[in-house]
Length: 270
Length: 270
Image 1 (cartoon, each protein chain N blue to C red):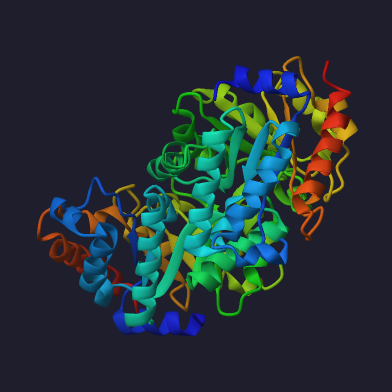
Image 2 (cartoon, rainbow over the protein chains, first blue to last red):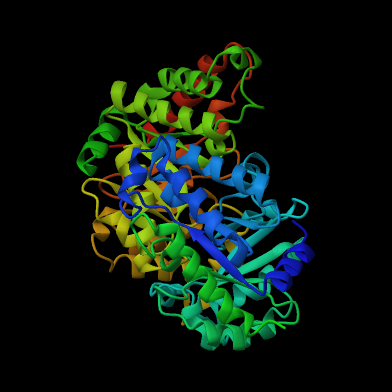
C-alpha cells in the first residue's frame, strides 16, 4: 500500500488505531471452538466489528504458529479476507523476523508475496544486510524494532555508546540504508517520554506504537509527543479490544472498545 | 534432549557437524519437483545420506515459510521424520524469534511442543523477558544470537558501551537469566578471532557456528579457538553440503561433503 492511502484513511476515519489480532484459543469465547476454524471465525467477527474505527490490522504470527498448520491456514485466511473485503486497511505481519541476507529475502517473500501483507516487523540486531532485503519490495513497508514496550527493552536498547542509546543508533543508522523511506519503527507507548527525541531523529517516519492499554502506555502522551504533520502514528491495541468479552457479545464489546479509542484519537486529528 | 546425549554423539561420531536444511526449490534437483512434496523428499534424502557424519540438523524456517502452507507441512514432516528415525540427532529450528513475554511463550510452544524441536534460535534485542519464556522448557535449548556471521553484524553488535561490545554484553547479561544453563549461542565462524575471548565469557556453553564454507569461515580456526572440554561446538554447513550437486547424485555428493567435514573435525576430537 502507498503511504498516502494510509494517511487518507487516518484522515477519513479520524483514527490511527491498529487492532492486534493475537488470537489465543484459551481466551476466545468457548462457543467458537465448535467451528472448524475458530481462529478465523474469531478474526472475521472482530474485523467486521472494528474495521470502521481502525486503519490497520496486525496479526502476531506467534499466536498462529503456536497452533501449527491450522494456525498458518487461519493466518492465510485472515489476510486473504482483509485483502478481499477491506483492501483499504493497512496490514501488518507482526513477525519480528531477521536473518542473513539470502534468508531475509525468503522471509520477505513469505510475508510480502505469498501472504501479501503490506508490512512486516523486523528485528535489527543483525544489521543492514538483514533488513535491506525487506526494503526492496515496492509499496511494502518494513517496521523495524526501535524501542520496545517491554521491561527487557532496558537490557540492551538503552546501552549507551558515544552518548547515544543503542535504539537511537538503530534509528539513525537504519535511515541511511537503501530504500529507507520504506521503513517504519516500533516504539513502545510505555516509552512516551522518549517520543519527542525520537521524532527529531525520524521526522517523517510512521511509528507503530504498541503498549497502550494492557501494558499501561498513555494514548494522550503518545499523540502529544509522537504525531507529525502526516499523523505518523499507528497505535496498536490487541488484548484491550479483542478480549473485551469472552461471551457471545465479544464482537460487540470489541466494537465499543475500538470506538472509544477512536474517539480519543479523533481529538488529535483535525 | 539432555546435553549429555549430544556430547556422547559428538564423541561417538567424532563429529560436531550440523547440517543446515535451507531448502530452496530453485536450487534442488529438477527431478524432485515432480514429487508431491519436493522439500520433504529432498530433506529425507539429505538426512539419510549425511546422518552418520553429523550430530544435528538445522532447518531454517524462512525457507519453509516462503513456500506457505506447503512449506510448513514439509517442515513438520521433516522434524517428525528426524524424531522418529534419528532421535539421537539434535534438532535446531533456526527461526530467530523473539517478542514480549506472553508472545515469546507462544513461539516456544510452537517450536518446543508442537514441532518438538530440541532447540530454537532467538534474537536478543528485546532483552530478558523476551528470552526467558523459551528457557522454561525442560531439556530444550535456546540458542541466542551472539555474534553473527554476516557483514551487518558490524552495525550494532560491535557498538562499544563501557569498553564492552554489545555482543559481549548480550553474552554476559544473558548468563544471569533464569535457567541460563539452557542457553547456547550463535557465533559466526567468520569471527573466529573473537572466539577465544568469547570462550572466556562462556566457558561451558555450546556455540552454534554458522559461516564455515560458503561464507568463508575457517573450520580449523573455529576448532582451535572455540572448543571446550565438552567439545562445546556445533558447526553448521548448509549450502556447502546440500547443494553440492543439483543432479541425480545430489545425496551422494552431499554425503561426500559431510564426510569430508567430519574427517576434518575428527582431528580435533580427543
